[in-house]
Amino acid sequence: MTSGPPHNRREEFERVALPHLPALFNFALKLTLDPKEAEDLVQETYLRAFRFFDSYAPGTQIKAWLFRILRNTHINRYRAARARPEEVDFTKIEAGWERLVEEDFLRGRQPRSPEEEALDGVLDEEVEKALTDLPEDYREVVVLALVEELSYKEIARVLSIPIGTVMSRLHRGRKILQSRLMGYARRKGILRPGTAVSNREEEFR
Amino acid sequence: MSQPPRGAEADCAALASRVVPFLESALGEDERLRLERHIERCPRCSRRVVVERSFDRALRARVRRSATPEDLAVRVRAILAREAPTVREAPWRWVRTSGLAALAASVVLALVALPFVGGTSDRRAVPPGTLRTVREAVVVDGVCDRAGLTLEQQRACPDSRHLNALKCPDGRYWSVLLTDGRLRTLVLDPEVRGRRLVVEGEFYPAIMSVRVERWRDRDAADGVQAPAILGVPPQARVVPRGEDLATLPLSARREATPRARRRDGSLRA
Image 1 (tube, each protein chain N blue to C red):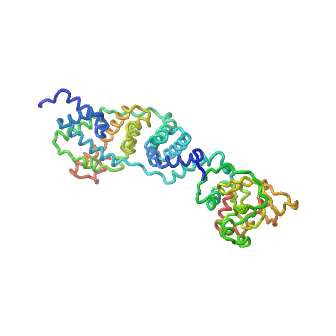
Image 2: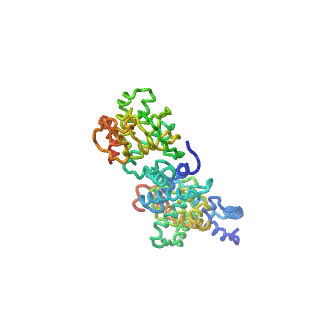
């Protein structure tokens, strides 16, 4: 019936922005770690994005643009009130991981095929817990890279940090996950060689 | 090669710190080639790549999005609708400010728009209307009248989904936008079908709808009755024919159907 940019603005916005709701909610949840806060954050994000919709350049990645607004909103809302980001001892983590690789190497174990599930025996909840336990700086990079599969460049824009920082945070975040998750997998594997040991989980809680 | 060549340790370290971009093929050509050559010669790094790649795949497969709350999309859309009800110049923007009519309007607007606009239930902006006075508009059942039923039959129509429309001298049917709770009798009540009105309001041809400003019974135009004014609060009383429709309660018959009860109830809320 009617047409023209101002009339269809909301319609257009909903058409391009709403499909990213699951991604935004997941990201919000990973940032806030609280479903209610995540919902608030998503709603505020959409409102702000709509208000700034004119500044969105059509054709560019709207998902990254929305992530950026969500993340800035989150910082404005929560981070100001929060203490300094948690410190993580990377020398320890790196050393632990190196030891795992080293052990494998020295024992001359057959390398597992890449197709083989590296996280055999690790429960979904353990994966989720390891992710949410990451310090926020790493968590957000890991989510954007591994779950949402954004490019380094896009992540850098979402988080307003240099690409080099994206790569180092992803590297470290991944290392933390590795040391934790492959630690589970390895210990379970050692207890019952070759299979997942679901009935011994309690030992690793 | 008993001793690793000079620079090999540097490559081991480089691979260790750059393994993610290496796996993701995100390295520059030079660096990638150098590390690939190194991996061929260094069993430890070759092992590392296998382990890392395996972990990478497993991790990607296992980290998933959390489920989105079912009603979140609805709430987001509601927020956007509140932010931009339709468009600035849209005629029913101020429906929001009328608490009484808001609920009914959301129901009725869709119903009103639907049959007459060709199937869109979305509240879109319409081009500005024109202010007009129509000297003879007959209140009809928009559906039944098109089907050729008499006014008497229309008054007896039990279908509460049928809304009243104004049949104007141009022969066309104009829907009444329920922009004010006091218009509900005019819009919803089958008893008023057949009444002839003088209507003043903004007519929107694009949606064949009229935002009624003022109206009165045409039959009372020759001074028998005071012109009806929208400011009169609705009262639950029986009003003789010819009196202000704004003061008429919805008819008892209409209230008896569950749908009408709900509709009426939401109006009163």
